[in-house]
Length: 309
Image 1 (cartoon, rainbow, N blue to C red):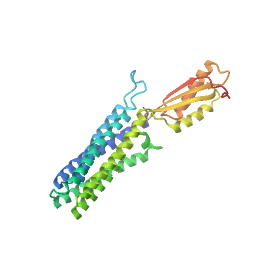
Image 2: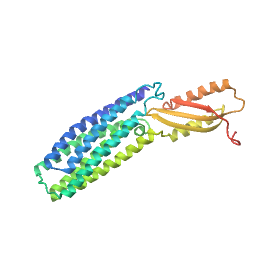
Image 3: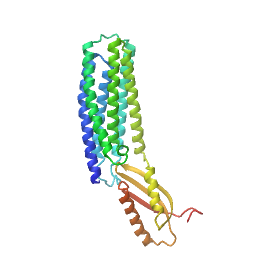
Image 4: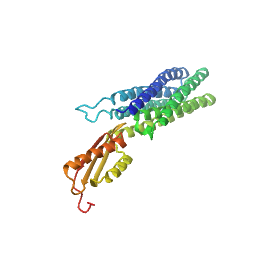
């Protein structure tokens, strides 16, 4: 574990804790406001915040468990724990947030607005949403600042940070949709506006859950890094001891760990002792240039007929 990755994890943990604290407070406020105002949009947002709070607990578990050192049972470490817990967070967004929002929308559409609405309750609900917007916006700003402070495409390599950013962005959008639905309901007296807002919130949550889940799935089943593969192949082909690179595969093992496996054909006349020295030099060069490529394997094979240079 590098010093840079440890510092990155510390910042991500703080970002997750900020999001968790905001969501817990907001979830209670939204639930109380939603019950007082009998607002399906506000209750949908309460479910959204509860789902986000549970997901932040998953992400904290991911940050802790993914840093466990390698052992005989897991020789490549526990880096993929982060992808697993991020997948659970995506499922939580879909089940707890999206499905409950769909239920609230359906119930509002079928009820026909028969329940007595309290104007005072709706004003209180809108105030709750205003406070929620400030809290969610603060959490979102912190997540965005952390992403911008990371080198390269920092958000793409850290599923925990990506999930927090997606949750906070969705939360801000959800608050705006809920506020619009409640305001139009209060002005027109038609509950369809709030039912529609709940439906949009549900669709938004399902879309975000699908995107996060697909990304976590790809990483769990062994996602490659095409750019890293291309760059390493160029380095290998430039070595005097390597005549031909028959195959080169990469697989992410964690946010800062990647497996690199290459099948190479040696230049004619290379003896085993010289290859061992060259192999160690090449592996060291790869790790120094790409610190995340911490698992490098070279396998000597015969080049196909007519390929040898």
